[in-house]
Length: 149
Image (tube, rainbow, N blue to C red; front, top):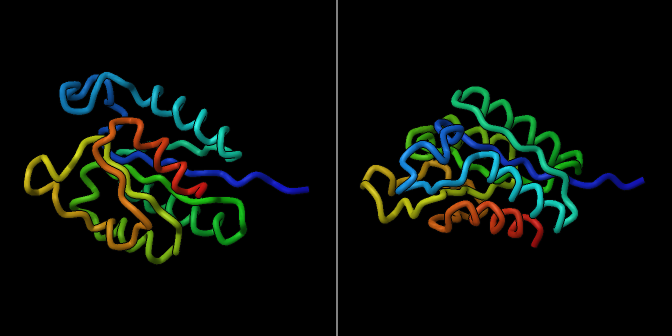
């Protein structure tokens, strides 16, 4: 019996506030909208969805470690990671991705390169398979499709 692989969509700090936090920047869609989009996109590609959000760096690191094991066991296609502000600050997340050897797509709802200078640097990009930025929540669907390709 073959088990379907899952995609882990991992959302970092403040993404629980989507739809309320700076809608002119991040849009009116909520995290529930994102979950629905990811569920539909995963179904189209034959994946199960594991969707999580945490405001705590350690919880995100633990999830990446678990993802590395699941990928090694053939249960996971990869991770879509919207690390929020941790993208620009967290060597620990970068090291978790590299250490777990988990296939990761870095995702940003906004075009971080058109925003404040501090958002231009990512600690995650060098260990990610790719980076998707600036397509709103559609970026999640693009990232899942990239994992399927």
